[in-house]
Image (cartoon, rainbow over all chains, first blue to last red; front, side, top):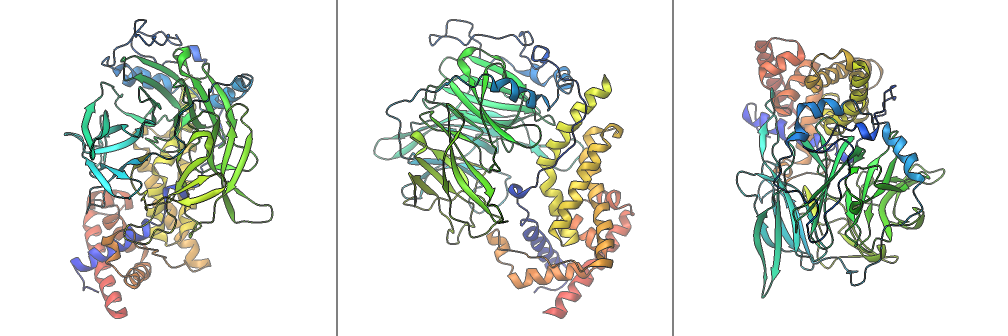
Length: 446
Length: 170
């Protein structure tokens, strides 16, 4: 033990950080606020509109040839960040989500997804994870590493292009080669010494395999992200041509803007509504595409602490998120989702990790729960083995065709034996991947 | 109408602030109280208080500052209650989260935690605000209601006392 002075300061600082690290974000208990009496504006009054778009107006999505009603990706979205919009959205209510649930139940009969042939039933080989550079333990800079899941080795490292300092989210297509990363940089928070992320830029990363794997570098995408908004979801379609993004104004997480951008044609379609999408800011797993590249599932919180999954028909034009979505399922029966719900690659099921408690027992269990995408009913569960530490949580990393393949894992301490490596669930058999893959970064895409 | 708009915004905003920042406040309260459950209660109370008083908050962008003051006040109330009723449990430093912290042995961390808990409440608070939140003396003075010079002298005394305690135990 060092004596008084700097030695004591260093020890105190380190001990405090260690103790504080015991409190983990995923253990945060919900805060229940008694609802107040509010006025619910109709969707037609929705003030979050793009420049030139009438409130509530629906725009047709362009044809594949891109001839009809195409919008330029370079069109500024500053209108979203305008003070008028920020003030206006305050008038909306989170309780409207409850109303939406009832409205959408009536529309439950139709199914959106079409099984697609040829989709992989095995997890992709290459994984992109956003992590701090070696030797750094802060998030002052976060780069991306490409990991070979068969060997566990880092095969490529990608740094955010200047002036960006951090990657914040990553999503991948089904080809095991196309990824999109969201990048930002730290800017001072007004009136505070703290720093927050500033403007956001999106980049495409492609992997090519000839004799060895190489990256083609980052291609900037002409997508704009409104200032002072927070990302709530990011998902690249299976064919890598459509990028879905959810965002909400800072301080108003239930006012969501969902946008689908065609990376091929540059068209943009936007929906607005009231839903708290994603469990965390920049949660790249809160959105998932069906293989038809048309149906987009998103999980969100209902007023009162319940969670639900909706499916948006992205080909039916933009406008109201509620009007173009149908309720797929709500988590009931004492099962609480502890991961984002994921639409399987064939669009037939929704998979989530759920926690519950047996009658007469206080020890929770965690199941992989599969729900029918057509009916929303729970069709199967698979009990996961208990974790070494009751405070730890599994994650759902990837779902394959039919929900028959899953990869789950937990965070671990680098340099120590992995207590629960990433595993693959096929049928009822859970087997570790050939190599130990760490899941400790800001985000990861398979 | 304005009132209605504010009401609609309060719930969403407070819920969002809680999601975004509650963990850091729980960590802060945990360090001051040395009791995880009590820390969570204090933080929940602080956010519920923010929600109840939202309409009275003149500068909404300073809501987190309000919460921090509420958390510190809540820690003081809790510390007074627990001192009279029951002992505050020891810190459990848990496994090392990084190589830097792994260099600090488990026993050393436990000693620091115990020594920290033996300090008077104000000294402990100043140390936590200085070395965990890394606030300036001016900021700590504002948060705790004491003068900056008192912050410096309190920290000096706290470090000296901590050094003595750790030396005795080693």
